[in-house]
Image: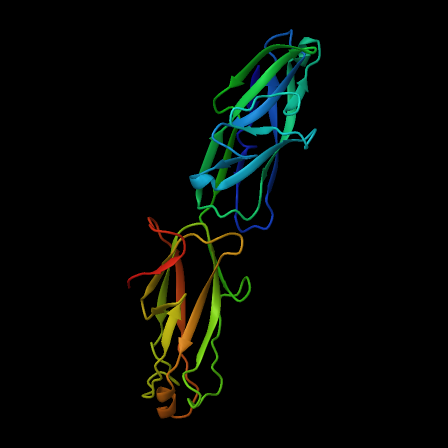
Amino acid sequence: MDFRASASELSVDYDPFNPAGIERIFTIHVRRLDPRVTAVRLVLANPGAVNRGSALGRNNSVRYDIRWVQDAGRMILVSGAEQPNATNGALIEFSANATGDNVNQNFRLQIPAGQGIVAGNYYQPLELRFVCLAGRDEIDRGTQLGSQVAVDVTVPERIATFVGSAGSQRGRIDFGDIDGSSGNPVRGLTVTAQSTVPYEIRVAQDRGVMKRFDGDDAALPYALKLSGFPVSNQSTVTCSQTPAPSGRNHNVQVELQSRDIQRMPAGKYSDIVTLTFSPRLGLSGGDGCSAGKP
C-alpha cells in the first residue's frame, strides 16, 4: 500500500488569538499495490503522543486532531502503539478492476482555538498504520513512515495591543479636579497585549512631569508604574509571550503627591506617556513580566 497527501492541504497558519479554530479538509491518496486486497483499514499516529489526539512543539503546546469525513465518530488519530482494529480507523474499499487501484479519502484536520503557542513552525510526519484485507481475511499489515502525510503548522510573529477595547491605541488618565486634601490620588488604565513572541515594553515620557504648557515653570511630578513595576523615561518591562486567547493586561498607574498638588498654581496639567511594544529574542526565565533596564 502507498499513502500520500498534498503538503499544501496540511500546511496551515494558526493565529492563537483568532476565536475560530482550524478546520481543514485534506485528501489522502491510497494506491493498492497487491490486487488481492479488497479493502484497507488505516489509522494515523504520532508515536510520541500519549493522549487522545496529538501535539506538536515545545511542551506539546499545539494540540490537534484528525477525523475521517465519512465517519467523524471513529478514532483516526491514535497514540502510543495502538494498531488498526475493528473499532477504529478508516475502512477504505477498492473495486475489483484495475481502475480501482487508486482511491481518494477525505479527512479533517482540527486545531482548537485559543492555544498559547509561541511563534514558529511546527512540523510532524505521521505514521500510517494499516491492515490489508481480502474480504474478511487479513492478508498483511504494516506501517508507512516518512513525510508523505505530515502536519505543518506555522504560528506567525504577532504583537497586537489596545487600550480598553480592540482597535483603540490611545487612552486618557484623568484625575479631574483635585486639591490634595484627600491624600495622594491614584488613577490608571489597562493596556492589553496579545503576542506570540516574547516582547519588551519601552516607556517614553514627553516631559517626565505634568505641565500646563511647554516652558511653564510650574511642574507637577508624578510616579508611574507599569504592571506593578516603577518606571520612568526609557525604562523597559520584559515579558514572555501572552496567554491566549485573552492576552495579558498591563496596568498603567499614575500617583500624585498631595503636597505637590497643594503648592501648584491652578490649571490643567498633563504629560504624554508612550508605550512601545517590540519583539524580544532570547528571553529567559518563566512566564510573565519582569523589570528591564533602560
